[in-house]
Length: 109
Image 1 (cartoon, helix red, strand yellow):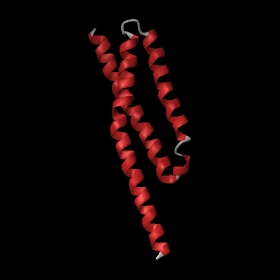
Image 2: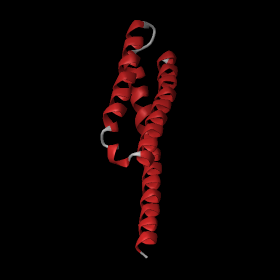
Image 3: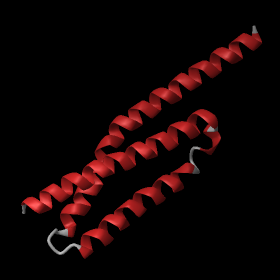
């Protein structure tokens, strides 16, 4: 049982890293090319599903660890940080929108 929990925690930490990578990708696209932001969702989903597939394949080959614990850890590791990263992305978007409005105001006046 302790191996299962330790494995779940390790995979959850890796899931946080995957969520951070998704955040970095989203932030870069939001700043450089916001019109392509919806298209980047496919890349983010591919990364998440790929991570889950790797966790499943590795977990199914290790007989001493329950794969369900690993998958739950992976999902929690990717999902829980999304609340924080989404809030940060919203603030980046608001700042970008505010700066764009100020630039448009300067050219109009």
